[in-house]
Image (cartoon, rainbow, N blue to C red; front, side, top):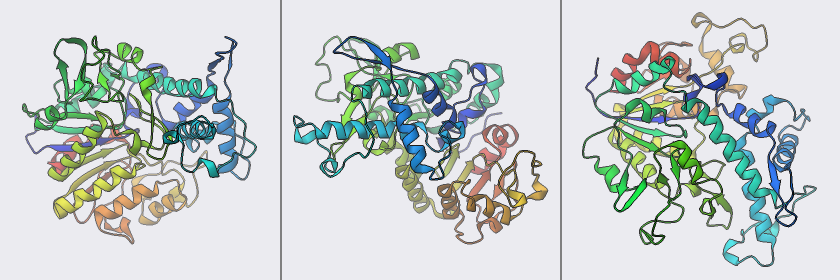
Length: 450
């Protein structure tokens, strides 16, 4: 059955792929990726001696952060710590250490001196600057491999629920993906992403924002706001091709993942400088904490502008697996409410583990599984009070429902798996995960948004 409604805007966060089939049962949660980064060694090459050694900078950063974040001295070897001291924080620290090391050199050009660096000194933390490249490469390489584990096996029939949902809506999605995989592209097949062929140049495509915005065939659009496995640097036969229209940081699209991978790891174009002189690593994978500075090249700035355009034009918004960790995106949500008022329709799909919270305690091994009959507003409040629920998510729910106090009393019901609809009719909330919502309530979601 094919639904004919209005276009719907979609934001897909890191929680969406967790329900997909992957190699060896691995799923790319923040915790799992972080543990892969920490547990797999990487080599550091010494240009002066030609020797290699095993790097330790990432581990040293992790231990130092564990000590700072956990004053009770929780063992840094505990894998559960990776949920808090995660890979994006580690990458940010790598960038900042390189920033300070570069800024402290007497030979550094003022443009590349971080403005706060002269006032900063590191206390009891020694690091080898030769490790920066190897550590950054190891972290990005690990992310790439983790994402590819489910991207490659996506055609498996056990993922049909995911493919069918995107295909069953004919009026068009405007999909904004914060993940790096190509599962949506594999599902929809025909889409517009703004990339176009280049005259007299084969092998890769360049981004044209006019093509994306025009979308003359009315296709669904796919917008990778923080990178994609198919992105990489250019390989023009004429190195001066497009030199006045495109920047060396801009991303080009390659036909397959292997080719793209060979076009960006080790590329000198991946490192940039923020306005304050900080080192920022741009490229096919945007990670770390300074993303707003990093998404200033193509296609990311084009996709960011398109996101604002879509949410102010489309009153239906589907948010799945998003932790509300990007302030620049959160602020645009609020512009949507200004544009559509009480006609705004948002479906928010997330996963909240409520085990233990309905018993007024944190989850412990052996706690019975909760049921819908166990749910009441106090337990939801308890979930967020213990800070296991995301406070930014709660703030968003309050903004959409227009209730700051006793917000959980303003839903038609409280459920672990089914839809909860706010009394103002603007929000449909699922907390049982993406697959459960799509498989069991897909038609309801499309009807609500359309």
